[in-house]
Image (tube, rainbow, N blue to C red):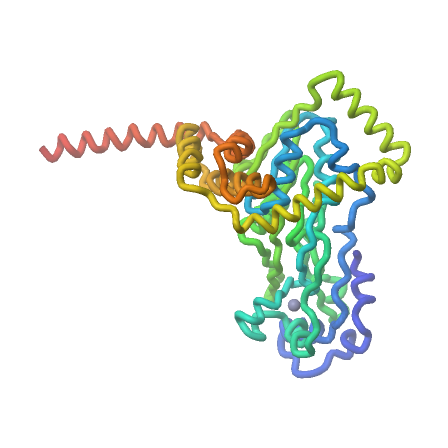
Length: 396
Ligand SMILES: [Zn+2]
């Protein structure tokens, strides 16, 4: 949405040249404007719902890819999915098809992402003036809606991603925070195709938000914090460049998508694609029941997940695997065990079994070893020994 459209959303009497009251600073001005700004912020068209998608159950093969995506929807704590593979292996189609399977989530109606629990915990000062006012009037601060699948294009501007001050509105003494993609993706999925080609400033913003679950926009004396708790899904073709290690580590599950292996599978995939292209609506209708069943199974698994426990002996097997593989990332335990819990929940098991762990271990453990860190640590060990020897002999 552009600045002009945003500005039309402000009730005329609330802003423009008629801002009144005791305004001493830019912050006061913002509060004044936002407090009078009663309509929920229109959802930005950057995060629009995608057109009818290829049904998830109609995807041929790609068993591991489908498993990883399913686990990430069941349990966001697995920490997202990275899909590596050459072009044309259906990575993007698979991710987009998730949109039919996402749960409904409670989302804030406010651009800052204020939530009722913040009010309950921190009082009126914990939310923006607009939300405090709404709360006082007994109006809801959130609504339930299907979680979003937001795609982050490589050529997005930083401001479109993190949101920011609407400068054109500021020129007219109206100050608005524009919602960025990171805020729109809150509690949903943020998908970055060719994530290895994402400019550094965008990937830094992404890492910040992914690490903390919120993002702070600063402009001079003004700042705003909004929520951004999303499941990150990235895809990349390793031929086209490396991914920065910080981002690589951020993905809990890693799938290597090799395309379809047998001529039979390739033929089946070709037939599906042609049939979908000819008549997407009819094709999707043919899968309606399967999509519905899968969605219900995923929703049931999400609800069941909090009850799924990880018994000590299974956890020890997992720890042993991590140790044997010499993986140093601290995130790997979380990804491994949370994926195993999601796998158990999906299969209706109240306890994680070795089978659940084995099913997800390749997803969580592959591409985790860092040769650079290992050689650094080996060199460090040698130096420690030398130092100790030297100390021992000098002190004798
Ligand atoms: Zn608010």
